[in-house]
Length: 451
Image 1 (cartoon, rainbow, N blue to C red):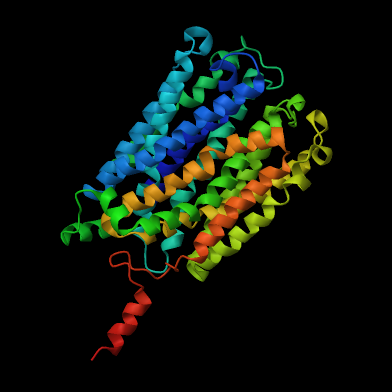
Image 2 (image 1 turned 90 degrees about the horizontal axis):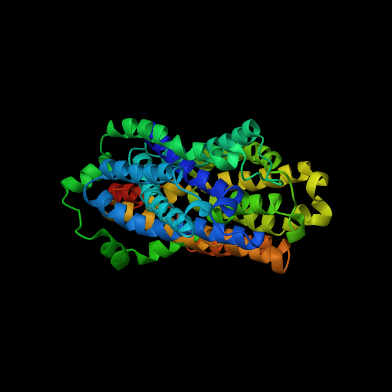
């Protein structure tokens, strides 16, 4: 189960991040009309955000089947949806070839990616949590979370290799060069191979015992989404805001910071070379990966709520340091940029991301009963993606252009404050029995005092 959840989420996040990287470095050049470069980047980021609108829809669609027919079959469907859409992006003609149909088709494929990922995360989380040993649920649940840094590392690493091989320079792009002509397509096209590997692993899965017991008790419902909003709407709201800071810090540390770092100096950005910056991101992502297992251990040892309250507090503090790191008077621009300072900023942000992201695949499923857990956790996770991820790179880019980079950090601190409030009013779920949603320790106490 652990291998299947890790492999699946690694593939899904690879597909998602390949697009995120290309949305900054490739798509503004090839899929949007020439003119104002800043407008092209914003248009590309808007297309990037389409997937986040699709993700809640995917969580409802795949969640329905995940709660009705089981986790295994549904996860196969989400993987295929994501994989086929990613492969097709690699075949799309550019704006120069078919005009406005190019960005339209790109948006459709991005929407399909969002549908697939919307159904993927909660299913993979349930594979881990619903098979975990007592007292080790956060540790087991952190394995699918590792798919995020693995997918991101492979996606960006592949783009780095391609820019080196094809001699691509983001500051002086050659439209007739091999990278922009066809090389950028390779990461999308090879995804079909790794999707086939993921399908092989998942076909061999068995259903989780927690879901099997719920079916045996006759607890399946006809309309999981209706049940969720009728009985567990409070948990949906809690889960949505619990995830908010996690999404905010990650998409600032990956998508937005890339656009700010490699963007033209004339637009108030740093003008760092794309290839140089990718190296820094690949180093920083190792801190993300290292902190995910640490967060799983902390959440089992000290509880989900207290662990996340401390980490969220650190994210808020980190938000108020953006000016100290990223102000152009401090960082410098172009070849004179302070790469060591940028690496420190990225490593701190990615470490915090690993610490806050790791426990989420335990926390959100623990909020919902088995017969609506796939739908409920997926809806909370993916609605939060709209608030914390879809608009974040767009808002951050607009803030830089209007009031300065320091306000991007204030924006992160605001999201962190909302997450802190949501955690404060959420009960601890470490000892929660997934079959009954009762605290196991409390249940034992009642049994020992009964006559």
